Image 1 (cartoon, rainbow over the protein chains, first blue to last red):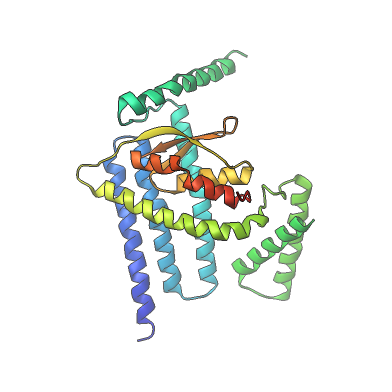
Image 2 (image 1 turned 90 degrees about the horizontal axis):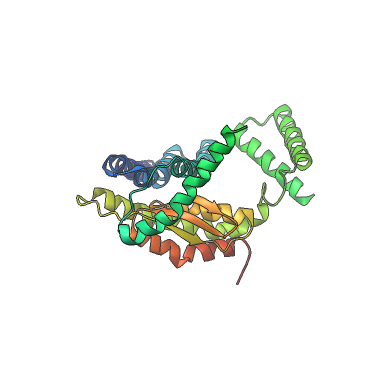
Length: 131
Length: 161
């Protein structure tokens, strides 16, 4: 009777985490371009994984394994955004054009610094090619 | 010097928590390696306020819970958009103002924006103190531009207004 409560709580956390991971996967398929897909994936990366790990902590009881799971959670939350940022920066530098809403307002703003990015990249490649 | 001791202490605690075997030999080895690594860090310069910002720990305890709530709120928001049959997205690419000055503050703000579902920091421009941010919706962009997170990161950084 005493250990059915943590089991139920852990199950709820794991179920919620699985829901958000699934939502992230569905979003990955539904979104139109790379950047919006990354937004969908980050739902699973942050909330989905966090809820899963919290569920495992509850399920495992309070041991050293709990500490390891919490370290894992902290590392994921510190490293995940670094990888996301690197991917987004690399995509923009490689010339992936994000789909933007309202071409007249948001698109114009983006167009303003797009050529700069491109010429900078071109200068870098031509500079690297000459010597 | 205090920071080096703190690094050694953190490394030793990390060793103890991961190991779980508390024999004299293993604990002593852990202590020796922790101190040696901390001294090595001092020698090679990664024991500084950027590499080991232990003085920001207390400020972090105030900032991280707020960030966790923000992550949950925006994750639910993005999930709603994903599961909406009409897929009501309005992607934006815009510049966000950065108040933070120290490397730790700027990295924390950039990571926090990326960690929050619906917004990604694409580029960091330290010269103009701004980030290039991609946002899934117009509302998400407005949230970042409102600057609530920016103010909290500045407070986390230790610049109490």
